[in-house]
Image (cartoon, rainbow, N blue to C red; front, side, top):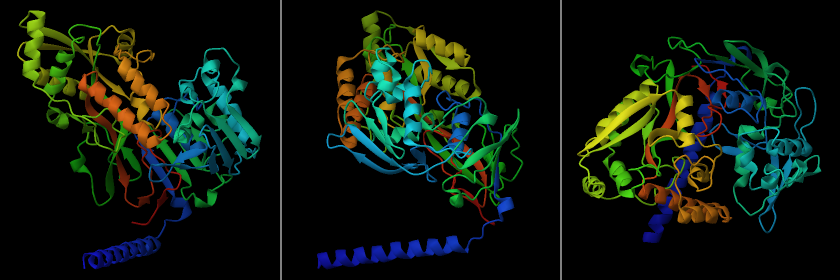
Length: 510
């Protein structure tokens, strides 16, 4: 009887899913697109791109525009997830180290073919020291990449080759399932040459139409291989903000009152991003060299008190791996007051004074003030907040000339390891000065694990070690909010990489 009930329930569930699918299809067909001349979108109050070279572009504005001008092996789709682009088929060797990509046909705005050799040349240039790309490390797991970086071999020794025009082969130094996802990042977009924005030869869904000091406009690229799937004719980006304009798309500033928004005309879209902000101690500096002291601070944090100071799309988190969909391995436990008392006894003092570096920024000022009040609940602790311009603050952290900092991290690629490598003993970005043989072993073990699921389990254990030792104290996950005119559909919002994806967006009649 139970088995029969289960079957009936399963059948009813299937029928319901089919009904919803058909209903949604019919609803989609009943919606009417605006005519081609009205298939435009304007993004107001957005930063303008500054760097046309995909290998050097680090600002979100440049990465976003370049992701619309070019199409690489993989891309961010209309739902924000990573999907194949120019890759028609991917095959891995039995030992998992050799990737063979069969490519789709693609041509540039000048009619030149994008071939396997285009990517070979691009990858070699990316690892070349003369390029000085901040993204060269992304190919560290490719054969000979490290040796090239050390000047021991030439770029043409890189483990990548063109078997023919449409077959690209890549050889890794170890099997690593899921490695191909990094190719969605803008640094890997096929850019044969670059001089200025106006002279770019591109192969993506849009091409540059006009650019000046206040705006940039892109037009649909009719030579794009899927041009028949691209509905928008024009994308305009303006750096002037006008939130009273009830059309297009608007990034929402930190202090904007969304209660004034006309909900009949505009939607509010909150988008989580991969960035995470946290308190970062320099574990070489006293008293932060004491694990108990760091744990007392971490346990005292009351993140809910910060919620009113965050932008609407930002959310408090106890995780460093904010892109992780699984639960944390462990939560820090203990009594903050007791730990703090043991530290004071050890130091033979009744008071401890520390300095907290913060940004010269309204939101950061509110957050750091609340953090100060929160941490000073520990009897005898005084927190002095020091605000510094971003450049000066970063220089202090890199040089190790700090004790405690409200800091942040924006990963460069869509893997959990992107959050964790900066805490390895010999990593050049290890401004926390953390040294742990067991942590380094976990990271090495993750690198040598082929299975993505097993690798992520190891990386969660590495995160747990950082949290247990309070090497990092997560505060909140970054995010962006947009006002979007009703009628626009299929706008993608990736968690990492470009801020938004408009490739297959379209505008319907309201």
